[in-house]
Image 1 (cartoon, rainbow, N blue to C red):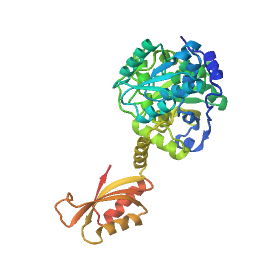
Image 2: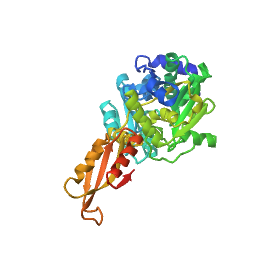
Image 3: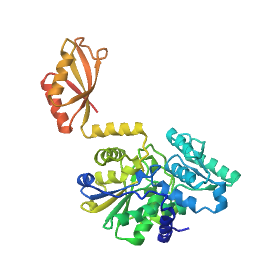
Image 4: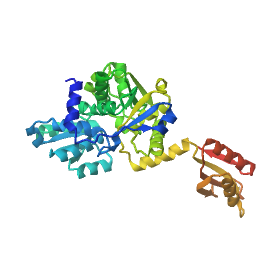
Length: 404
């Protein structure tokens, strides 16, 4: 069943009032670092933290009355499960979610708190889907696919209708691609209303479902690899999504994990916006220079979700600071006589740096019993500051070994 502009417009009317019409403001700092005129569609501000609510609510509202009473089911480890649980609760529709064993505990508990029945079963998505199919057969539940059901695709396309209304002079929209439901809905809406707007899909180099499908001419299975953009990592792009998007998407690019991590940090620091890895890939693509033709253009970034684990966010911040030269680590050889460590600290302080941590290593410091190794983690301004600090330490007689 194809999805058309009238389907997307009908979905927009259907979900109005139940979905937050997220803002799409200009970003001066992101424009400065990318050379584009950036606006950000903040769908990470939806109640459950992602655009998935749009399709979930549309699909639930499209159910016939008898099916609403019996309920729905989905296999999902993430945002689709949250969106269904939340809107199922609002609409009084029973929701069952089958999650694989690796699903984050926070998402399991949140789905339960939102009223869903959660079944944790299987070591991968295939096993979870098999369990969901068994419950469909035994309990008469309706299965709602997270990215390939037409009603889901139509619901996701409403984000593009909002963007084109909020920013009439858009030249391009950068959209994450995982299973393809979001970019399919966006592409259908954009190319029907304003075909001159470029629709550019962005994947992680660790996913690549849509690019693989383009090469093969059809959806193919892509081996799962660990990625910060876990929301882009289903095993394959959806068949309906691919059929709708393949001839409407203008370009597909991929970005490495280091750029995704840096984009998360830039959005947090410059825009005060928390996003998950899959939502950071549009900015990552611009920062990595993947779409140079967009310089000076009016570009919309879809910030599709904000559900990032706090421990992952902490590691991303630390790695981003290292990338920027704002956090550095080195090992200095220091005399083990009184005042040796104080002298080292004084040189660091005089150089305008701040010590975050020092580990004083005696036992494994080499053959010189009168010397120790001091492993220093230091806060600095940038890479030039790091180099200047290293020079000052060497001049002061502290041999260094730089740790990356």
